[in-house]
Length: 417
Ligand code: ADP
Image (cartoon, rainbow, N blue to C red; front, side, top):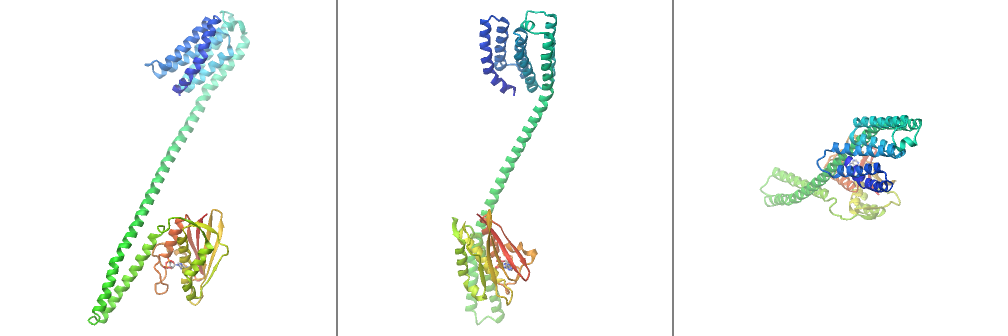
């Protein structure tokens, strides 16, 4: 603080003191020439002469301010600026050197005021102040300086400490926040990289697994065809189980591939009319709709939204086909698609009158390969909802379900506007 004050002080004090020296020369005020010249020399020494400690520089600097103020007061009788200088020095000393030195300046100010009081009382000395002032006026004026100096010595450190601790606290918080922010960004990036790595991994694994599986299946078929007559019924049954297992595995791998392909096939979002998407979905599912005599009701005038078209189509297709598939025995499925505007996003609801889902399973069903029903009752691999979740999250939305056992389920998902 002291260093930066001096940097500002050098040019300002030279502007003030050098013309002062010149004017004092013209008006033959020798005392002022001395005080101003001392001022210039001391300030330049404080700033530029090497070898002094900082405390010495501070003492020199404040000392010259004292000389200037007493010159103004006593020699020139210019009590206003003189007293202001004394108050200024007190504040500057408290700020740059601490409260302890503040007491010294307070004592010095009091001493100067009493000293001048004595000069006035005894009417001695050929100083301007003695010509201009009466003792009672001086007591009234100078006591103000002493009161203000006392306030400065006690108040300035409190204000300064408060300010300093607020700044330190703010700096500490800002640094912590920046560190947390950087850490969070790093973690998000790591998570993103790991996710991509994992997706790439599952994609290549499932892709590579397909070929040996195809071989297993075709050789089992070959075995069955070529050695048909030599194999007994048990052997045929085992081959049948093995082929069935291989087929199921193939479906799982296909599903896994499909899951890892989410987000890879479409590069750009486009503005899509959702009436159109729902019409396409119903066309794609027409065989299933006819098979179960299902009714599909869709809200009129669905919005146009910026999305990955094929992926959102797939979400509706999965949810509606589940609504049809998980119907109650003997009850024709009715599926309803609704849309509501939630300010920041659109919310879609696909509800059915099917078998329902137990409350404690409502979250689990979105996990990959998670199924609640037997394959013989309701075929499927358990990937559909996991794919829906991945697609919805890629659009910055959320997906969840509500259900009542035996009455039906509603699947909600949101898409950011
Ligand atoms: P899949 O349909 O191939 O079984 P999904 O991921 O689509 O796989 O669904 C996971 C499980 O969630 C289903 O096996 C079923 O138990 C349950 N489920 C999904 N949709 C419904 C629904 N509309 N009604 C009742 N249960 C459902």
